[in-house]
Length: 595
Image (cartoon, rainbow, N blue to C red):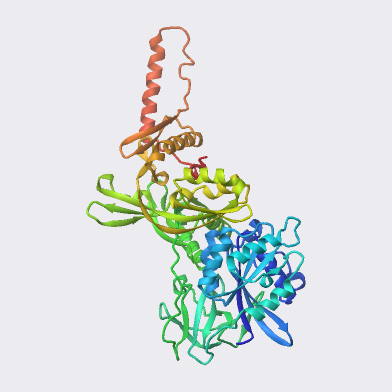
């Protein structure tokens, strides 16, 4: 055990952690020759296209120092704020972390939040300044920032470059010398923490675990703590570039288990595996349930695909434990699922993966957050969907979730960022200079306001320099109203939203204008209305397509034309009563991009 080191890499998005992981794998000869490619650990097509890490990836490396051989288990983690749940799970399976900071960008908001998560778990932190080979690099200034943040000595900070391979040997040496070996008793009853799982269509569910105490053998009968079900460990092993089977794994090791599990409900991330013959007394704690922040309806375009969509979501949930879903139905879209996501990027990725990996064509409704609705009798219900809101005369007040947002930016962009946050009903809590001309601003903001297009706007007004991180602080009472969209007097439940009373009229008007552009013309007039309760606040009309029925009349009495026009009018009226309006998918997405 004394020769095992478990560590993860944490950093803000785009600070080069996957590239640095490539150099570590190359230097330890874990990946050689034709297997070596950019971002080896990002094995999803989507990750390579976008240049981001979506899932944590584990891999074992062999390293020799002063004649001793060490096994280094590396977990590469995502850097985007939406995937911080993945980071929390990786941190639970490690004793140390490489904190990577970009030499040209310095410390960003997500660096700080991931660092605090690692410190809470008592991890040994090794600070690394990456991209030191860039012309725009400023390692001295970034060193000052790290010393201020961590309180470490300057000589503890390693300068490196993922591109050229500078400093890689120093990093490997520091991992062995500074990160403690795992603690645990190899002779105690088996106690292993499940930190991830993947679905394989041929072998069932493969669970990744870290052994805290005891050991596990191939063929041993094991059970999962949360459901008490027993399985044979058909194959166990360590994670190299491919899975390498082993006969036995003991305390401190990170590995995988295949036991022919077919149902996704039987494996929970954060569960404990123990032996049936000699079970451990209690499960490993320290895993929080993931809390989805953004909710949206996902509906199949073809109603017959409902069961396929359910199966696809269940398989995705294995790969991504932070996705939650439950069935719901909508008058406009039929049967589908109400899905909970961690943020907008997460929602986009899930939508894309449904299309790529499972060939599912889906319609996604307007995303919203969960609200607490208090009725006049003092009862409280949690509402994820505007259509689930009780009648206005029963509601006493509504509370919405607020977040504590941290924005780090250069002082040149403070004005536009302030304006943006205040227009989203934000309140400035504090602002302070971190170093040089970099400033940290803290806001309290309603989550519902940032959920649609806040992140994109922040990036564009700060020319990409501002970094953003948030956590839920509390629920606060707000003056919210339900805004309904009516087409020909019929409410389209998939387009209804909860919005603040002050914004409602403006929002309703913009929505009607947008829908007028998107809804195709029919044989009859379509009235598009925005309503709060029974009060109509905005209206647009999509004009009907008409045939000129009077074209054949020339000369003669005016009553001939009137008769024909009257006849057409009656026909249009009948058509309007039986005609239905199809809302194109673009209309649901348009609400996201109203500006």
